[in-house]
Image (cartoon, rainbow, N blue to C red; front, side):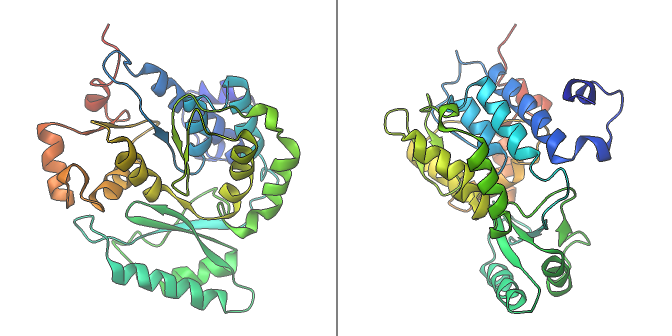
Amino acid sequence: MGIAKIDGAAKYSFKQHTPGENASALIYACSVCDFMDIDTERYEVVAVTGNSMGWYIAMACAGALDADSAIDVINTMGSMMQDGLIGGQLIYPEIDAQWRRDSDISALIDRVIETICDEEGCELFTSIYLGGYRVLAGNESGLKRAEEMLPQVDERYPMRLYNHGAFHSPLLEQVSEKGLASLGEFLFSKPQIPLIDGEGRIWTPYGTDCSKLRQYTLGDQVTKPYDFTKAVQVAVKEFAPDKVIVLGPGNTLGGPTAQALIDINWFDWTSKAEFSSAQQISPKMLAMGNEEQRSQVLVKR
C-alpha cells in the first residue's frame, strides 16, 4: 500500500503506521506542512533544529534539502531496516518531578551502560539526549539487562520504543555505509536558514560545506549519539528567539524542548511549575500539536 493510502486510512493502525518505511514519510509530511503554515508576516524563522529523524525534516525546512531530495533521503534512510530491525531503543527519565536534571540519575545511567557493555554478548549505548530523558540503543541482550538494572519509574520506565532500531549507535554502521553509497552529494544544498545539528554545530547559509553536511548526516548522525538538548540550547543561545515553535505531528517534543530550556534557565524557567505558569500567561513555546497554541502561529484568514 502506498503512503497516500496509508495516510488516508479511515483508522490509525499501530502496525501499519509506525514502521520506519511508513512513519518517516508521514511524519515528514505533517511537519513540513506545519512549517509552511507558520505566519511569516508575524514570525521570522531565525534557525531550525530537530531530533533524530527530525534532523532530515529540519534540513528540508531550512532548504538544505529540496522537496524531492528530502523525500529521497527520508525514504532511503527510513526503509533501511524494513527487512528487520537492527537492535532497539528504550527511554528513561533523568529529571525530577519539576523537570530539573538529576545528576545522580544521569550518573546511574552511565554506570549501567558501562556495566552492561562489559558483559559478554551485550551492547548498550546512549542514543539521544532528549531534554529530561535519555534514549538508550542496544542489542536485545543489552536492552533486557538495562530493563533489569534501571529502577522502575512511574510504572512506565524504562520504556521500550516500538518499531525503533538502535538509531544513533555503532550498531548502525552498515546503515550509514548504505546511506553514503545510495545518496549523493548533489542532493544537499547550503541551508537558507541556519541549521543546528545533533552535536550543536551550526550550518549557516554562507559557510556550509555540502560535502561535510552530507557526511555528517549519513555518517556520525547515524552512528553517534544525537544531542537534541544541546541543539535546542545552542539555538536559543545563539539566535535568542522571542518564541520557540515546535512542529507536529502531535506534541511529543514539547516536554523535552521545555526541559532543555529549563536546564539553562531560559525564559527564566527553572522548573516545570514555572514553565506551566508562564505558558498560561504569555506562552514563549508554541507547540503546533496544541490547538490553542497552533492558532497563534497560523496565518490568519
